[in-house]
Length: 607
Ligand code: G6P
Image 1 (tube, helix red, strand yellow):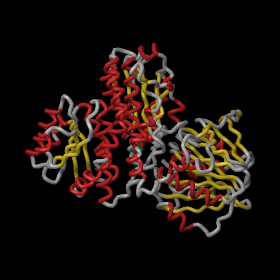
Image 2 (image 1 turned 180 degrees about the horizontal axis):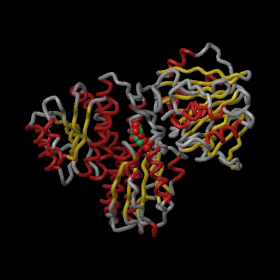
Image 3 (image 1 turned 45 degrees about the vertical axis):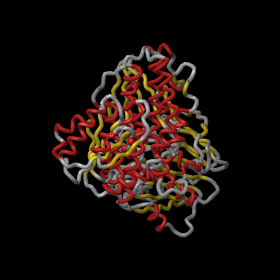
Image 4 (image 1 turned 120 degrees about the vertical axis):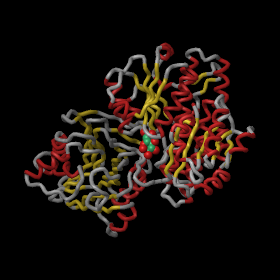
């Protein structure tokens, strides 16, 4: 959601903070600010709007070798200069950057007001600043601990104090903060994206931990001041993995990257001898795998749609009842947690709060959770009992593309292993393994449809509404296709199981409303063709995403996009590609802000 960066060392902090904020801008981009400590004063510069606005208001040579910065996605208070972080205490000595939500902010405000406090912003964060500033007799970390004892909600915070120009204090509950270890300089950030250009040695704070970071090191402790020793981990991604490689948008780069990304997801995990998958990180032995009676997939947004396909894969290959549910819905309905159910949390960032809370709820009740996660060392990866890393590489664009397809591949590997530990025959296992190994080539062929997809997109980019339909395993293809279109083009798009069209949405079909049909050549093909007829009879244009070789489709559809046919259960991976390209080219034609669409954020760390 929002992003935090901090620096302490011998260099000028401002350029380091600004370049860190650039890397974090994908997390939130409605306002930004930095606080610099120099000569026992804290100077705050902030501005509503994109980072370029902040650049414009910065003095020519902002001093200070210690500072914190923040890029915001507004929750409490509109995106204005005053509401931008860091927030400063009334006496100007303490500055705080905060990710998360202070749930009891209204009550704390009332209490602080009664004590004479005056607030300069509408944010929940400002109460933290006031709480810290209330007392000045203890060390900063103690003041932060005392303040946080009053706070209900989630936070990742970075605090600087004019009177302590030798340290940054950070604390975490529900929102990540990471320490980056440099050579006589140290960094803090909410996301490794902002750190990898300086260091690949990082320390993740866990919930309920606080740290004092100075130029030479750090001390970590619990909220009751018990010291904790933590050792650094090495980040696997290189700095240049965050570059756009000359492309106009990260999303486009990430779409093109899918062949290699999927190769990485598959790398070393396919077992040709036993026609199964080897997933070392599951932390489940063969007999534990056999005990699994049900699988529940949890995630949000595209990760939830990946979970729906995952459920189809698991039921089909392993014959284990499986279902997917949006993580927040699951968590709040007092779910029945069973010992023999395997819970699988799918998340690119590993930080989505609703998914993380669902994981915590399952584990609290004694259930076993696997994480299918992209960001190594992220909260969900750390909290799960085991899992599968996607290895998709950094995904920066808000709209998920390669992490989505890589999570499908990771789920296919899981389904294969579960299936082969039961009654999926070696022969079916072999066929599936071969299809998985052909996926990179199938993806390349799907990417080669781009010129045609672009031409189709230009024809329909000015529609105001679109439907996406599919049957069985093709329904989540429609869900994700519609999601991509609405996220980045702002065209209203809705997905339905094709069979549901006639039960309501058909009333909205008319000449200006295209219907995108995911039409794999599976057992349901004839029925899907019948759905095209229903749309055509209402003069609705039809865009078919299908495989070559069935004349009936070309005769009925207004546009046909063909991708290679693979195993039925893997079609969602290949068919996702032209739908991503379709959304991209529609958004491009409409001049949308593709990587940072309005109102959205890459990683939603607030409820
Ligand atoms: C946000 C993003 C979506 C993403 C969802 C889940 O809403 O805008 O693109 O699918 O979060 O993110 P995760 O990191 O958990 O996969």
